[in-house]
Image (tube, rainbow, N blue to C red):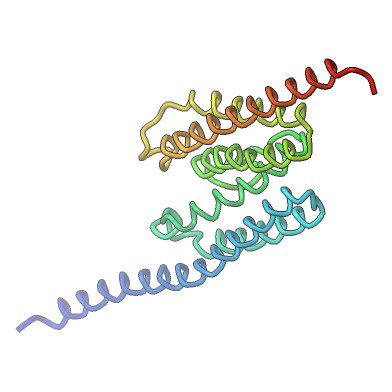
Amino acid sequence: MVERATHDRLRDCVAEVDGRLSAASAAREAALPGCRAVIRACGSSIKAVHRLEDDRAATLADEAEAALRGVQSAVAGHPAIEHMGFVHDAEKEYAEARCVMALVAGRPLPSADDLGVGGPAWLRGLAEAASELRRHMLDRLRAGELARAEHLLALMDDVYDTLMSVDHPDAVTNGLRRTLDALRAVLERSRGDLTSAVVQARLQEAIESAAPPA
């Protein structure tokens, strides 16, 4: 028969771990809705940027930040939960939204520390922000703003080239290389679209200049 002292010690040790796990589980359940709110607000903020609704984009980004801070507070002290994928994804989406706003507006990029997010989340958020510039570039092409579209493509190129210098395993960067592969494909399609638009514009100019005066 197990001695009373041994039994009590066994019970206390299990109870201690169980208590920590209960706290971690509660943190997870509190963080998940917040992460969903962050992702939802960031997606809407980026759409507002494309629609040139700057004030609405900023308001939604602020809402995302408030939700993210709640998530970070909930998981503080629970590293196993803090480093789960859903927290990283929320931070990445927030970084993306803020970087899209900065790139489109021509403002300095906010750093990872400025945004209060992890380095890998910021890197991936920046890469995805560059991909988002494709939509803005196409909108500018449709509006006939070739110079603006060329500037946006140059920004995409610059982000890609700079991020390619980050040479660490995916386990460290949380999948940055795959995100950059996707960005490269977006960049190539965007360059083709812009090239076609420029050629078409030059052809139209040549036709108009060669036409006899009315």
